[in-house]
Image (cartoon, rainbow, N blue to C red; front, top):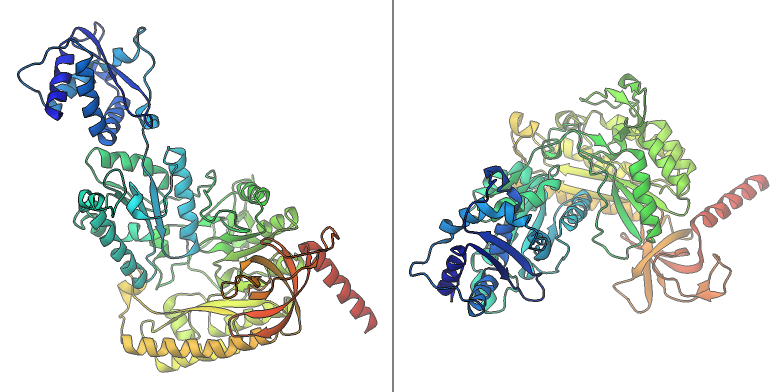
Length: 631
């Protein structure tokens, strides 16, 4: 059939003024291409446009078998004679390219249909590893792809024509997981025909595998050389280029763009939310990091800090509020160093930038615009019934004004992530963190003096280069002294390109790292239990997230202001919002819960009433005033 089809097309080519209509199944549009056997009178090679080459590639790529059948059918409806010698695609396609420009402007033919719009662009499957910033990046990618016609997302890689894997380079363990998944995706590509035959794969053509994010930036050459495992490698600042990179693959090339940007914030991109109908969302407010900690790869994979304009953030949050979102977490690699100079005519010099007392930075601020406290205050005032959290900050950027804004605005959650990394001043200096153990503890003391009920979480790395047993004991004592609500703890893994990789030796044996990590976890569990126990007898405002997985038919679960998980029985309670009798709480409700029981990881209580965010804190403030007047 293929041979006769090519003969038919060759015969068409020899006709002086012949139009060829290719009829595709209903899911494709009718495409009319007019081929002329001789050059037009005013032919110019420039007129052989790049847009046709794109159409040609898309047409033959997505519909090879359909076109073959169409050519055979067209043979039975015409008096075209066969030729004895069948030319190859390479012989007749240049002729089509050279003469197609006049055909597209012919008065006798209808306007052609853009093949990129007429044919399915391919279904997308995506996986994300690492931090919440990567999840937000994937939402940006899906928005960019949707705008380019890739609108369908599937739940399994076997049904996809494009597979995105968004990667993390912070720790070696995350990279090893990515390599494992890439091996499976390579299997889907290499054995596509047999996988389709046995029903393992339902994709319409072999999937293109796209590696995104930090690992793409760090290991681009290694990834591309991995036995044709990956088709496209795209860094965090190049997502807008993805449609073009995928077209490069169609023309037989690898697609790669890992250039870092000093300006890209994707401020104009409206992310496609991965979690549908959710009452919480994440909003990226800045990208990159200037801190240059000796253990961290982020400045090399994410680039320098740059902040989104305040107005673009406010617009995105307003859209989320219309969609029913009740809690927003602001994201950034160093979120509280936010610095928007875009809308200020006369910016202040960077010498006026204030750090936390006792903290410093290797990177100096050139100009100062609207800071993180300004952004938080604006959001809190404009959206009084929405909660705001943020992550991940650096301890150096907690000047007093930020703490006072958090104290004064009830809808800014009383929870701070304060990464310590180590409790040893010696190790902190080697890490280039810009503070000592004493400065960190002083900051904790100040935070809790301004906001007594502040919840604090942290990050810790054990087994960093040169860490001694005394250094390790300092970290254990810091954990016990602060009393964290939550902590992320990891054994150190050295990353290429970092300051530590160039200057230090990873000299702590793996067994000792694991033993120290176990001891950190035990010390944390001792202190965090006390944080949860102190909540017994209090009333917490809980944002309902859904059924408790352990008892989905009888219990609901949500988060308190401090981020503690709180579960309670799903029973009718008074509704104070509209004073409309009793009803069962639902997802998105704020519920007053009296805490009766505590574990080291969650709280349990009795629901008292459904209320509003502002109403709850107004009542609390009135009770505080009444109590103060009595005493």
